[in-house]
Image (cartoon, protein in one colour):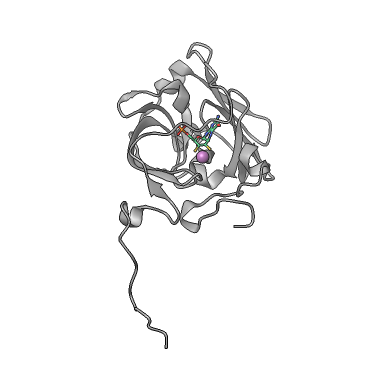
Length: 199
Ligand SMILES: Nc1nc2c(c(=O)[nH]1)N[C@H]1C(S)=C(S)[C@@H](COP(=O)(O)O)O[C@H]1N2
Ligand SMILES: [Mo]
């Protein structure tokens, strides 16, 4: 006869309902880079959005820093299973950067100094969901974590948050990026555990 203990859910996990399935909490800040850290001096840094019509919108470091700044406090989730709660950043909302961009494209391919790429739907960059950040925990963003500036898209697995971000290409069709080509999920929602292609 089976004895079923109804409602037994095991020990509550640290992080509670802010920890997506299969994740554990870290207090430190792991570094995950697929290659060497590119060094990009801010006087040679530029960020660009290229539309599907071939228009380019560019910002120098000075122009970027003069834009309205926000301070998102968010939880981040890496596909290698660590999560970090309440991380503090400073940077520019993608809504601000997209203000004068005319585009009907649905897909974005983000590219970085050093050659890394990652793809996501344009709508996941808008409506207060993504930033280009240049400060972490009150300090300039360290080069190993993507300084001078990185993308921050906390509602998707952290591989979408391209370090050393250089630009965004808007596309009518979805082009997979670096990890997406290597078998990781196209979208990467940590709450639906979309780690690998087919999840
Ligand atoms: N340019 C670039 N961006 C990147 C990566 C990378 O290798 N190169 N790794 C991604 C992965 S897999 C993760 S988990 C996070 C790690 O960011 P961190 O090193 O600041 O923790 O950056 C993402 N952005
Ligand atoms: Mo990652």
